[in-house]
Image (cartoon, rainbow, N blue to C red):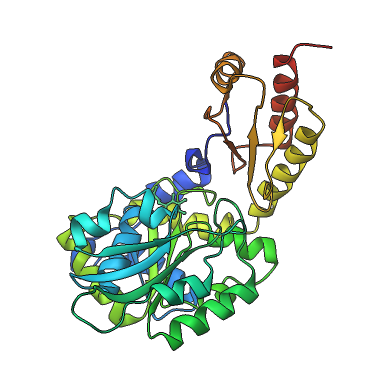
Amino acid sequence: MIDLRSDTVTRPNDAMRKAMAEAEVGDDVYGEDPTVNRLESLASEMMGTESAIFVSSGTQSNLLALMSHCRRGDEYIVGQDAHTYKYEGGGAAVLGSIQPQPLDVEGDGTIDLKKAEEVIKPDDYHFAQTKLFCLENTKSGRVLPMNYLFAAKEFADRANLGFHLDGARIFNAAVKLGIDVKEISSLFDSVSVCLSKGLGAPVGSVLCGSKDLIGQARRWRKVLGGGMRQAGILAAGAIYALQNNVERLSDDHYHAARLREALLDIDEIKVEPGSADTNMVFISLPAHSPQELAKFLQQKGILIYPGKSMRLVTHLDISGSDITDFVEALKSFFPVG
Ligand SMILES: *Cc1c(COP(=O)(O)O)cnc(C)c1O
């Protein structure tokens, strides 16, 4: 199968599975799982933070961050289509009693800082208290410009807001810019990183931040039922991912760029702007049915999500020849002439 639906579909290879099978474990709720402890140290070292916590998913990681920055009745500023607002089941409101203040996201994935400043509530009990500013990097496969991040940090500091990054794909951003990931992570008070996407671990995310903040997150993780016991088996896969699968993200970016180039040559396909900045290409089909295309491709062993705008994602389990095969299959869908 050539699965272009998401980078979450990556599967552990033999070496990762071996590391998982051989992991030393203990009860992590007691802080006694040596492999989880090793992962948390490695993650905080890589991110340049005091502390880190291994959690079940990116959704849980973001929720823990929101609940650690904000109390009941507080508010966070977030992108209208940000994962932490739109794609997490309303968890901040449901479980944290935290009110979102969503704002439109600009074409380049940023949130206009002037607009953000305008929605900060005055200190008056008619209003929720604005406590946190959240960004996402990469956003829909786009790397946020470093200059923007510097300005956003300055804004958050000046406005006395906490500053959280949903860095599910922060390593894609760092690899694309050719910088140490710390240069991005150090600007934020907390950073959530997915290990189960392009990095290829089967399960888990890490939330990184100060000792204090991660201490709070550890308490909320237990409350949310996320205290895991011999989780070292999972952490071993995550350590393997951080040690072996970061630099190679550039292969995924290269494959996405090649894919974009090839698709630009197919008249029936519209390649959307912002494609292939990292590992995602967005296309639409002005005159054909996406559902028909998806069905046609599936018969050839290729998986895509049909839709008005279709996201094609390159990852660890997509090779150069998969890209070639996909483009050939795609061309054969359109009538000749
Ligand atoms: C995937 C993703 C998450 C959540 O991760 P899960 O592990 O699927 O819960 C959060 N933010 C962004 C930007 C993501 O792409």
